[in-house]
Length: 245
Image (tube, rainbow, N blue to C red; front, side, top):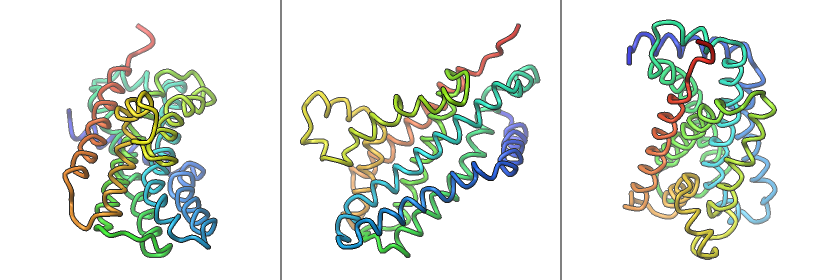
């Protein structure tokens, strides 16, 4: 990997996103709006917000980063930009690293806004450190970025990219423990949930909400989410092929 080429790729992606205010709004504002809405939906039952607010603080960044990254990368593919870049002396690691860095910077901003809003303005009750919440939210957003980069290779249009959401995100959403504890699910569903990264994202958030110190389970959850993100980034790099000879 060439650091200069990676940084140049990241700068180019950020310049393009700067001229796409809708994507910026989706990235930064939608998670915050959803958290505010959720807080006042449960205005009469703040304990309910405490129970699910932390989980959604990890889920919202993953979903929004998945959508924006998959669509933005698909535009690069369909417009021929990726084709031209791959014809240059630019390694796959430089290219995928540049995309991950650009969207990762946005993920940091998004996670900081959502976490700060939930903890200091919406009154989310956190027993552990809010910085650990931010860490998990950031890793979730980076995982969503990696998943978006990966699935964009299999979509021929933006509509198809959005259709991957029910296939990739919804099963994880249903089985991550948000609606019912995973240990109360049917054994087959619990086994499936044990291999889905969103399950560990939710578990990591809940560990911070319930325990004042860093636990072994929290370390495991963080490592699994980070490892899945790196694995999917590697798979995304493997899909970067020229479509013409």
